[in-house]
Amino acid sequence: MTIDDGRRSQLLRGVLDLCLLAVIGEGPAYGYEMTKRLRARGMSTVGEGSIYPLLGRLERDGFVETRREASNGGPPRKYYSLSPDGKRSLETGVGEWETARDAIDRALDLLKVEVTP
Amino acid sequence: MIGFVEECRREWRRLGVPDPIANEMAIDLTADIEEAEAEGGSAEDVLGNSLFDPRRFAAAWAGARGVTAPPASVDSFAPLERDRRPWHRPAMLVALTSFGFLTALAAVALLIGRHGVAVAASIGRNVALPGPARFFGPASATPPFRYFVSGPSFSVQNGAPYLVLAFVVLLGGIVVLGLAVLYRTAWFRRESKHRLW
Image 1 (cartoon, each protein chain N blue to C red):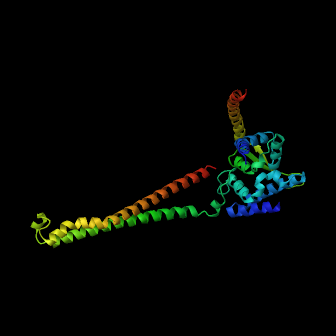
Image 2: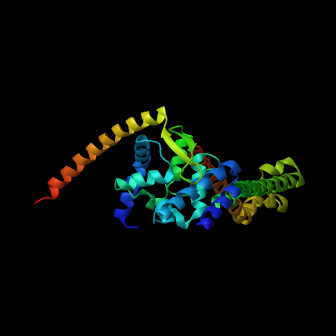
Image 3: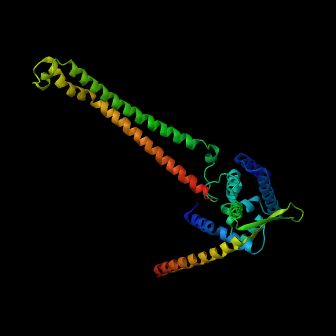
């Protein structure tokens, strides 16, 4: 793994729970459905390890609620939806992300000014 | 793919995950993988790199759900040796502490023993002296008195390596005990970190 890959991986890890909460916030979803939603937004997160452990933690911490629902011809699937705590955590997380992103943008803009001839 | 799920099941069983929870996770995983394959994808689309390490994946998932002792983190997993040999840390701690304590004890026993011998020898010589006046007399007065005066220097010269050895052993024991304390501290800190999950 190169240093660039490592950085990308660390960045994704830091916000994957927030992204999961966001895609669950769009509507109840089961595991693979969430993976597809994330991929549709350009996040190939599962390359670094699957989302299941993270979903497990969100469930254990009470940020998501689950229920079993029948699927087309297959076994019942476990659907995840946001709990009230999950909604609050998502709102807080988005605010924190925006603050961090703005600060990083400013730092990188400064860098751009320095390296641009 | 059945092989992957079966590997996970074995790991969950080994970690003591209750059967209903293990079954639920296995069913969810199988359904997701089958759906990915039905859409022309593969299990790797569902599992990513975890596909190549089912045991680690299973341990991480169960740990995150809080149904077993958790790994170091969801993303960076601790070596499975940790779960495989749960006794090795306490055993190491007991071994270090015992060794350090016994070494220090042996050193102290050597020192006390040596001191005791020296005192006994001095007392013996004092008692053997013929009369109190000779305590304060010249060193060359009589052969017994000369022997008494030169006794201590004779003992120290011969006992110096002995004392050094005893102090080195004592120091070694203290160092090992210190290592045991450090080991215990690091271990407990690690365990506390895991308990946060």
